[in-house]
Length: 116
View 1 (cartoon, rainbow, N blue to C red):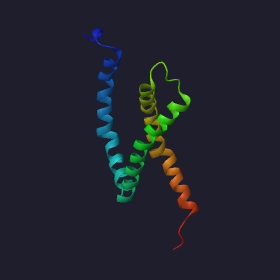
View 2: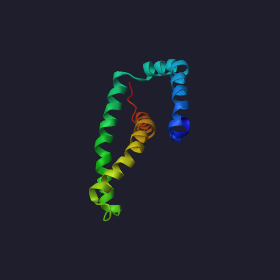
View 3: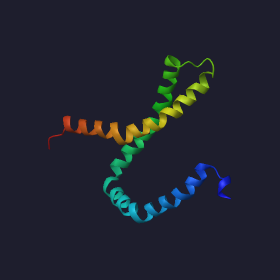
View 4: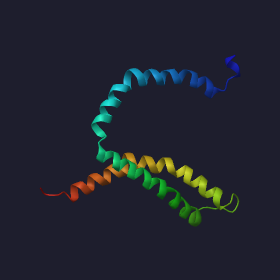
């Protein structure tokens, strides 16, 4: 019966239970701890604001990049633009939420520190 399954389906039969076991018995407590430590009303607002910025900026910048740099004659402008936006979105959200956003906020906090 398994010989008819695709390789990815057979892999999922192994990886899905492993993921569930890891989540339940290894990572649940650290995730709860880090969530309670890191997520405050202020950080939640920052996260939502960053996400909304990406949802607006990514399609807009992809539109501009498509118009300026992409060869869209074969597939059409709209299709090329949508493909570009979909490809750029995961990188944009990861970059903004996990790398660049925190680094820039730290840099600005350090440079423009309020003296109390």
